[in-house]
Image (cartoon, rainbow, N blue to C red; front, side, top):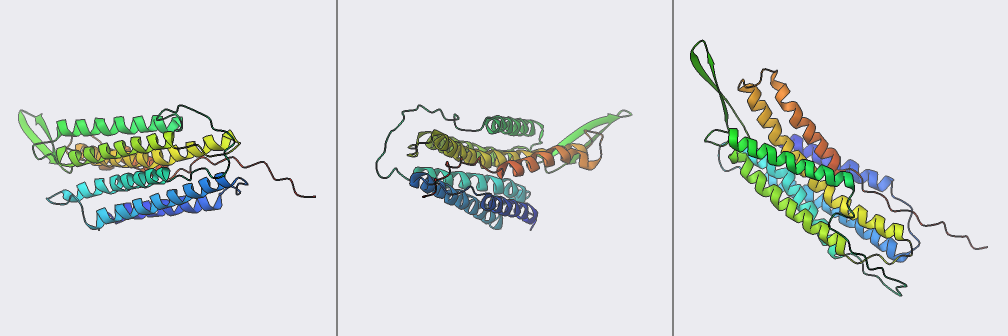
Length: 290
């Protein structure tokens, strides 16, 4: 199957990320509420990766979107989108079932949190860059594609004679429409999950650093997969579009030159997807009994 290399990279990257998380796990907390929250976050994160990968595999196996010639390209675009959406929804469910405080609660802070207050700044900037890139590629593809929505034609004149050259696949509406719908659903799911992260009850702890770190880690997990999936989709569209434009003779360059920007964007997306969430500060060491 043509999608096997993409799925192999996805599964390998997820395995490495989970292995790294286990090896670099911080020491257990002495506060029961913090220990329960960290355990819940680990389970939700693992389930999100596993179920997201399962959704991607099912999308590829069933060849969703492959209903006409060239449809396998639609399936390839839907694979990372399916991973991102399911991953985000599972994390949102995990935030909705966040452990409630147990026992005596000594204090509670009333804090007004915005949607992106807990999110890492670099991830927020990367998210806007990914959305802008995807929108630019989709609009340009729709404007430059021919009537089929999946081919690019370049016309030129030499010595008074007109020539035309056509190359495909190209990210016109045939590929761009399902990609745009999928990315929109992913963006809405991510925004909803971030709202849940911002508004879920605070963890009952005397260490404000831990509460803040747990919320930042949750926002990081939501954003990294949504942003990474968007970059992979945008990179895939950019890859086929750039390759088609070079092959059609619009740009005088080696055939692989048109694929480089898309490949770089896709690799960046894979890296962002599995960047480890920030850790939670360790408790002060317990004083041993004398």
